[in-house]
Image (cartoon, rainbow, N blue to C red; front, side, top):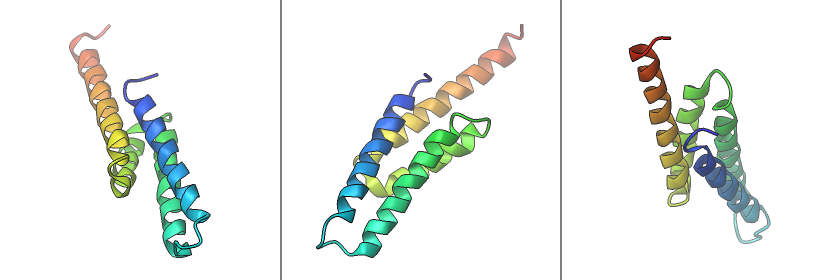
Amino acid sequence: MNPGMGKIFVSAFITLAISALTLGDPEMPMAISYVLMGLACMNWVGALMMQTPVHKAGAIIVIIFSIPFVPIGIIGILGARNWLDYQKRLAFDAAVNPH
């Protein structure tokens, strides 16, 4: 697994769990619960997109949809940033040392 992916999936799982807990809270307005659940699901979509050829777009989605869940979202943001840096290093190494 690439660097940062563990942080991304941990953050996505925690945000989804928090969103699911708000669905069961009778004091919480349902609109807020649905918005939080949608944001958490988009975070998962971004994490899964990072495993496909559109990985850079997936990392950007993870970063954007982790922002509303700060401070837990910081874990996902740092993981996605770490993963993007790793991808840049791989591209640089391939350009410098073509085999």
